[in-house]
Image (cartoon, rainbow, N blue to C red; front, side):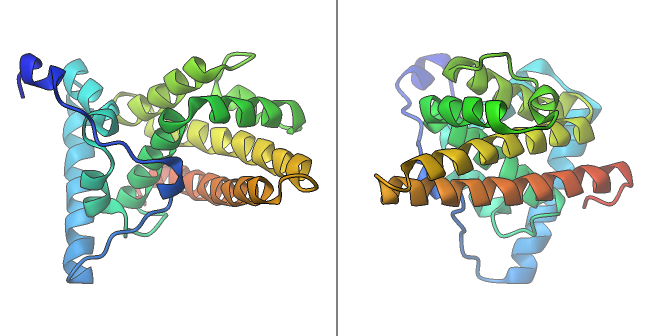
Length: 212
């Protein structure tokens, strides 16, 4: 696509509610084979020669194209596999890009409440506003392609733990007055906590050459 035609291209955006959307495939074995092979080929080729333009396009993929193309490849993969890990990182990025104001609110509450080093590991500035969180999640995703893969996953896991803590406390705040909003924050907290566990395990597997 040329620069001129891209100017008129409206990216397909997806709301944060699609955080855990799954897609169906005709043959599970074939879907799994394609998911694993595409993830391995993509990652190995880019990491072997991390061209800045290529990495930039991969980091901004969902902004340009939405999440559907990635979902068709990787959404049904096990959480603790290479395609499943990449899928979760793109979902995390999409969640932050889609509503950075809420993400910043949740993150700051978690940073203040969570008694751990997770905020330091994640690497967001203090305080972290919407723009800073967008930049952080893009930086973490970029680290998958041109940095220490396991460290990038550990930063993402820490980020998820801070967000999960913030969502939990906000759910408590709204429980008495806005039960629907409290429930939404509770669901977000549970998803993020699960993602944190999955990404931490994926980082350990990567270090043992076991993330496939």
